[in-house]
Each structure stands twice: as C-alpha cells, then as structure tokens.
Image (cartoon, rainbow, N blue to C red; front, side, top):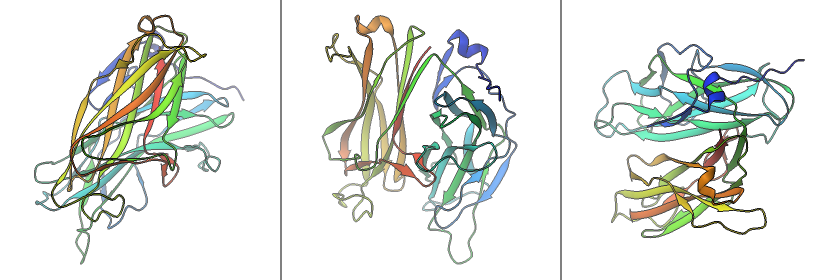
Length: 332
C-alpha cells in the first residue's frame, strides 16, 4: 500500500488562524460540510451520534501524526426550553480504522468537549474541538464528529430534540513537528478556592519551522454541594470562577533554562452549578526566537480557582478512550 500524506497548501505555508472556538491551522477541510442533523436527548449520556457528512478518511504510516479540528460545530434545541431545562452536551472527535473496526485496545481514539446548555440565557453551544491523532500502525483511518446530549428532564415521556446546524466540519493537517500529551488517570486534582495549580506538563522540541502553537484544553467541573464527582462544595456558593492559561519554559535537554516562562493569554470561566462542566480551551503562540537559545519548551497548564466552590480537573479518558484534559504543541 502506498501511504499518502495530506498536507494542505496552507499547512505547508505555515498559515495559522486563531479562532474564538479554538486554534485553526490551515484552510478549508477536505470534506463536505454537514447538513442539518437532528437527534433526541437521552436521560443519561448514552451512545454518541455521528454527524453525517463530517467523516474524513486518510492513510497514515505508524506513528504519523495528524492535527484534527472542528469548525462550525454547534447544537441547539429545536423547541424553546425554559429555565431549569438544562441539557448536558458532549461533543467529540472520534477515530477508528477505515474498515469500521476499533483502534487497538488502549489507543487514544479522540477527545471530547463538554458543557451544559443553560436556558433561557443560552440558546446554543458551539464546541472548539482539537486533537492530535497518532496512527498506531500503517493503515487507513476514518475520523468524524460525534455528539450526545442528555438531561434529567427526560422523564415521564418527555422528549427534547436537538439540532446540529448545517456546516459542521472536521479538518486535518500535518506539520513538521507535533507532540501530544494527556492528563493520565489518577493525576487529576481538585483546585480549592484562591489557589492555583500547575498540571498537564510536557516537553516539546520544535523543528522544521520558527512558529510554535501550544494548546492545553482542560475538562473542568464545579464541585457543588453533595456532588457525586468531587468533594468540598457548599451551598454558600453557586458555582466556581476559574482562570486558565498556558506557560512555556524554554529549556535544554540537560535541564538548563533560558529566561523566564512565556505566559499565554488568561481566560476566565464562570461555571455555575447549572453549567456544571466546561471545557476550558487555552492557546499560546510563540516563536523560536523567544526561546533564548534553548532547544525545547516545557509546557504547563495553570488553573486558578478565583472564587467559589472547588473545581475538578478531569483526567484519563471518557468512554471510547476519548481524552478529557489534553494538549499539543505544533511547529510550523
């Protein structure tokens, strides 16, 4: 089999666009956009629904890396929802072998973006998914966008229909140097009020370009009173205000440092009890000139609990080996 490597002209040129929903590398994806797609909310988070028209298939050699990202991927209720009709939503990039079989057991197969839709103030949610696929073997692979929505209001025969509007896309590009890391199971923490933690550390060695983009996306949940997923919450607060950002410390393989860490933009997230969970996306752009002569960067994610109940940083994988809190660095 002759393995093809898809490199968009924009990727080769090193074009980078930073969009509000995430970091977008390159131009239009090599797939047609989806049409309107409707689906039903379930009582619990059950089977993902694949969004028609978003699948892309490509060949890759063992260990070859592909940067994948979503565009225009949103969901909204078909009928108006009232206050209290909160809908949980998990958007995902999911990959498998092109013949439809699953990747080898334990292989990271995608990532997810999650948040509750809280009406009436919110009428839609837009996900900014991004993830680095690493081919487990020489072969052909298919990746696509998927979604599942769920709510405790689905009871006594009630139904809620959601819609992914036309235009959702999944894009792929290949760059000279790409590395990926995931917060492993058992390494997640809960961040107390007025404290800051450093997590999701990894080292990247730039090559083949002068521009570097680092993203660190954290799956966060507020710890409400009597929360089944984390402790420490009280009724004195109705949620958590969180700040997140990326830092990159220029370094050499021997551990020597070059100057102070480079700090990325600070983002603020207000995660109410109704919102419950939120994927906090963070991006840092820098150049090799900022490394002060060092050949590597050590990246970390900073999470500061500004006020409110504790906030949990989710680790490991969701069903289907989808990364919760994860990051990547790309040189172009």
